[in-house]
Image 1: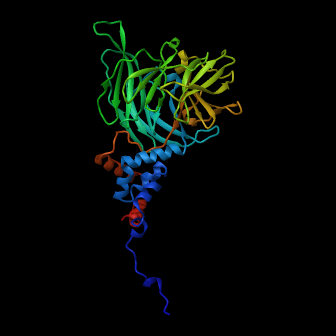
Image 2: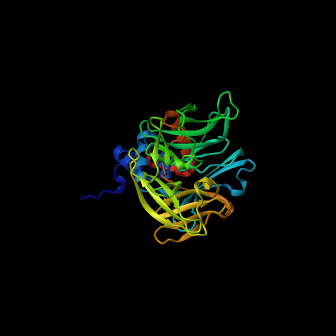
Image 3: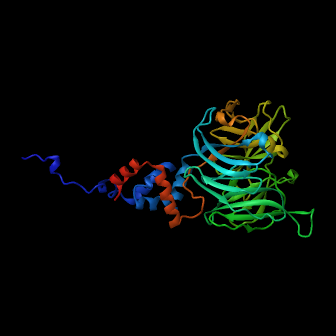
Length: 416
């Protein structure tokens, strides 16, 4: 029997044996489980892969798998503490990945914005989007994974007194992302009386819509977003309730405090999708922080998750001074993180009771305010729903990720 040489075998069409025979649903399933930067690179394979991975269905599926795999932790530096309320400067947004231990890891994304900007508030996070805003009403949204950045239009400015307070989250009914802002405005015909007002902007639009007036003034603190609701602490803590805003109905309601004697000092970011707050008890030299979670916000059912004895050398201030000293608190992998303004970032082990300072990039110094953020990597677009024009922008951005040689190799091997 004559042997068959390799050269006698029919040659298959270039690249079709690799990609064309794989079912689309299998490709969808595999790609939706990959990290965001890998998906972005695979968008160069073909137009069909670009269309698939840029679709809203794929983005939602990728987000679901990303949440199921567990949150990561980002550290976002602010401006140096001595610059707060100081002269305006250009804005530099940086995002560092924290993987554990006492050191901040690699730089994920940096965005330098020329101009003059006032003090930044702590960042807000929802589904991979990071929102940051300044005291002068500049509001910006970015996705560190896709390197997208968007500056939002300013809201009402006429007659506005003092700082704006901003919330951010996803409307579960429309699946759209909304930005909400508190502000105080002079009452018509008066120069001294102020009224609390509220506006909402949907990402992908350019218009702020006036919503129903809030029931009361709120504290200058980072509001959490939980299952379609944004929560603020009231300005008068004696009210014993949180102010809740529904992103779906765009109305306010009130949620009772946890059943404890200690006063709430800050909301806490958890790894799960639960409303959580820290309540402070004890004197400044012997402080105890109780962590409470609420599993049902319709009929609030509070549960005390843990009690933390803080070291006396790092006292937590009361809520009235929360933004002056304590920036944010988060729980990540059974560790409590709290950023002290002008004194770096600290990690407290709930299991061992040991507090250690987290080493941050030397160039930033210790006098920078650091904000820990529990983060979900995603492909969610900062400009709202996916369109054909946005797909073209995605392709241009994807090509910038890859070298010319890499692009040629992908097209040669895998293009159908």
